Length: 344
Ligand code: PHE
Image (tube, rainbow, N blue to C red):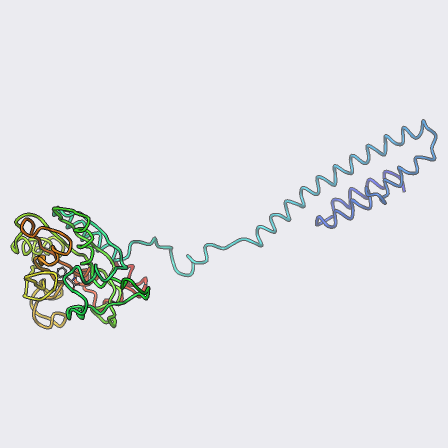
C-alpha cells in the first residue's frame, strides 16, 4: 500500500467515524504503536541514510496531517456528543406551568397580613409592639396574673404542659397576657404596648376555635388611666379596623388579672347588627376580654399601684380575620388550600 493510499483511506475513515469510539479505532490503526504509519517508520531502517532522511521527512509530515485530521474530527464529534448529553439530561421546567397554568407568586398568609394590619392600627394610636416567648413558666401564664396554684380560674384555659420536670412547670402559653408580665418585670413605665403572637389551648377545633391560634394583647400603664380610656381605645380600634359603622360594647365579665373586667363585643360584621345565624340573632360578636389591671398583678411585678394605673385587653387575631373577611369556618386558615389562601 502506498503512502497516498494510506492517507486517502485514513482521511476517509476519519470523516466516516460517527462517534469518538470509532475515531479512536481509526486513530489506533493508522497512527498507533501497531499502526501502519509506525510500521512504515520502522521499515525506514532498511534504507540508505540519504533516502532514509527524505522518506522520514515525508512520513513525519504525513503523520502531522493525519493527526490534525483526527483532532479536527474529534472536536466535531465531542461537540455533537455534548449536545446529545445536554439534550438527554435536560430538565423540563415548563412542565409545572403547563399542567397548573401560569405560575403564581406567593404572598403572606391571611393571619400574618391581619396581624400586621392590627399592629399598624395600634401603632397609629401611639402603641409600640412587643413580643414574648411561646413556652412559658407557670409564673407568667398564671401565677403573676393573680392565679396562685390551684386557683379555680386556671380552668378557664385548657393548657398544654411540657414535660420538662422540676423545678418549674413549663407550658405553651394559653394567652398573650404573660407578655404583660415580661414588660412590667423589665421595668417599663409608662407602657403603651400591643403584643401579638401564637397561643395554644387544648380545644377541639371547630368553626370558631383552633388549638393553635393568635392573640393580640394590649397593655397601658400610666398615671391616671381610667375605664373610660379603655372603652375609648376599644371603640377607636374597632372603627379603625372594621369600619365606621362597626361599634364596640363592653359587658361585665371576670378575669383574675383585671378588675373590673369585661368582654368586648363588636357589631356583627356579617349582618351589620341586624341579627343573623353567625351572631345568634343578637347583632353582636364577642372579640375578646379586657379590664383595669388588677392591683394584685402590679404587686407581683413591683409596680406601685398608688402611682400607676392601667388597662389591658386581649383578643383573637384569627377571629378578626374571620370577621373582616366573612370566613365561615376558622379551620380553613390552617388547611393550606391555595384556592382559599389565594383569595386574600
Ligand atoms: N387573656 C384573656 C384571654 O385570653 C383576655 C384578656 C386579656 C382579658 C387582657 C383581660 C385583659 O381570655
